[in-house]
Length: 147
Image (cartoon, rainbow, N blue to C red):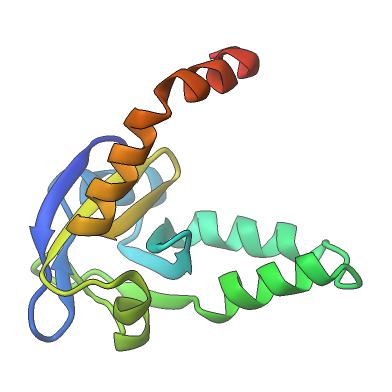
């Protein structure tokens, strides 16, 4: 499982280093250094390739009759890009994905169990501030889930 958060910079070509802890998990748990990036919730989400294929299988069973399902599939899956981690431990993030997530220089990579989120540092700070301000309500939701 991916956990922790790391601050990195994205270079002028759109490359960002994947933290060594995350690369280690990709190698040991998934046996590869291939990931899939897509857009979601103002950031990018990065899935190990094997986890991504599980999502695709699940999504392929959804009814495309519902407008909401079609909209989600269009947004989530059409923006997906397969990336390989290079010898220096970096991935190249395509311009469209960088634009969506407002990735310019400073980024945060956050472990989110089976996936990793990539945020612009500014958006990340806004998101964390919002979560802290709503912590009591979040605590109630977490308690209801049994955590």
